Structures are given as structure tokens and as C-alpha cells.
Length: 170
Image 1: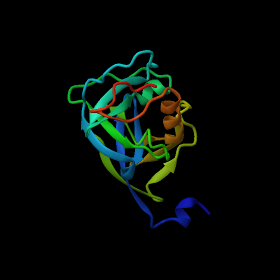
Image 2: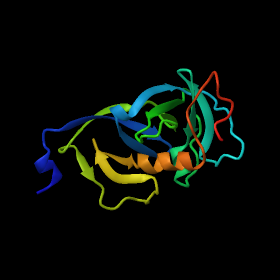
Image 3: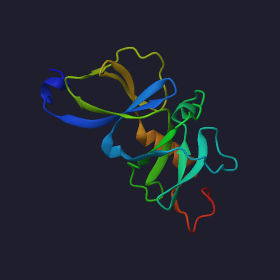
């Protein structure tokens, strides 16, 4: 019995998030907001994938490149670039939000057991990808947000109030 046989009536409202050369599939509940690109405030001694921090709703939040965090080239900021502000899924009060650099406009996808299919042989195995699938005839990556957030924490990335924070790192 397949998962689609056991859960045929469950539909998850999701977003297809365009990145450089790949598309992420994320539930809409994991995304706080899609916002216009802003040039990040650089951080001293930050890894290449941590682009800096940006201001969002009175908070300073870390901004990262998913591509670079997976060892690939960081996507360029395109005209009309955007960021996806993500809800932190861990219970860490210091990392309640973070932002992903994205390429283009996300699209709504209603995902259910009928229109999602696991990819049997992905082109490349990436360390921050939980699973590979096809949705609406498009190859998608399901990110491992636990690993992604652990990476951010490992370099001291936190959320801070804009009015009181001077540094992202301790």
C-alpha cells in the first residue's frame, strides 16, 4: 500500500520557491512572508552561504543562500529579486525567523497524494535536502529545515530586535 492510498484526501497548501537551477517545495505555513530584495548587512567572518542580515518587521534576521549552503554557486540577485522569510521550525527562541534568497515569484501548489511523486534518482544529492519529488510535472526539492536551522545556529545566527541589536554573532 502506498502513502497516496492511505492519505488520498489530505491536501497541503504549498509554495514552489524558485532558486538558481532548482525549485523548493515548502508548505505555506513555513513561510512568514515573501518580501522585496534588500541588500543585506554583511557580517564579519561569516561563511559564504550566510549573506548577512536584513531588517524585517523591526527584526534583524539572517539571510542565506540555499544554493551556497549546499556547496553550489550562490544565485545572482535578479531584477525584482525577493526573499522568503521563513518561520523557524525549531523551538529556539533565538532563531524564530530567517530569510532565503529566492529567484523569481513563488507559485501556489496544492499538494496531495495524487500529484506528488518521489524522484527515484535525483541528479545530485545535496546535504540540506530531505527529499526529491515531482509536483505538477516539475522537479522539486524538499529542504531539511532542521539541518538548515542547525547550520545557522552553528555560526551564531540569531534574530534580534532592530532597536537593540548591534551584532548577529555573540
